[in-house]
Image (tube, rainbow, N blue to C red; front, side, top):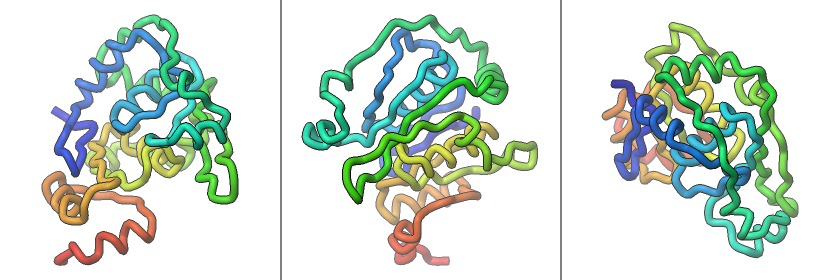
Length: 207
């Protein structure tokens, strides 16, 4: 059993087999996703990639005023459309389909908007996976996920881990003691994070 997603704060976990089951159950696509559950966010992203429709990912918790500045109405958050089932045959089938994707797909993410209205930027699969290192030598990596899941840095970490079938330990937003305990409990080998994250973590490190 290989874990796909483990959350440090809640302990919620999903295996790669459960990921396949959740993808196969989807019968409606969502062109715009605003999820408080990071696992559900990436399930929708993977589904859009495999089913061939573009997707827009938003930070969760946006107010109506913030959405209005982005020219998005609350009704758009619930829009969906029927899709054919993926009928994935298993984990290797899932990974093969993503690894061999023709690249004709986009996901749109928003900039932080610190200098004004957030700007939508479209990304292709190739740009999200360009720096990913996929090989047998990375098969046993365990990645800590320390970025906001709807931001570009989070997508880079996600695809690095996913394409190597690595466990992803979601530590973004967790308390320092929860993060350190997750590192130990799950044998984290790799982490990419901001300086702010490391400064937050330092008081909890004993070694």
